[in-house]
Length: 88
Image (cartoon, rainbow, N blue to C red; front, side, top):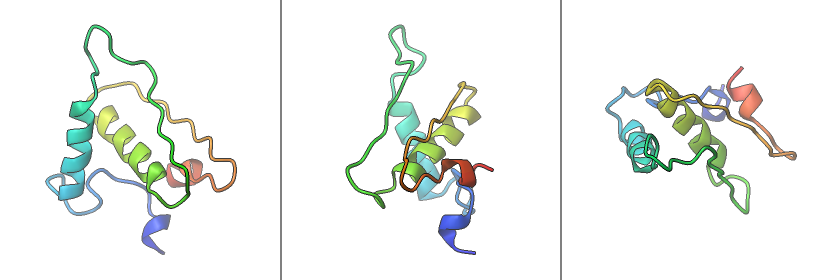
């Protein structure tokens, strides 16, 4: 099993204090959520595959859900969609 086949985890198996987990925590804190004019939709996109968009979206979703936010991930990559398999 390769690392890409593993389900996403904000801790990535290295503990919740890992650099990766802290990065997603920082990203979630930088978003204006819970404010008076907080966004209802956040869109992530990239021009090429392999840039980490799916990993970023899923780890951020896991982090936000862990903080009690309601999260819906819509995977719209019609060529190489992986969200449904990583979260299954």
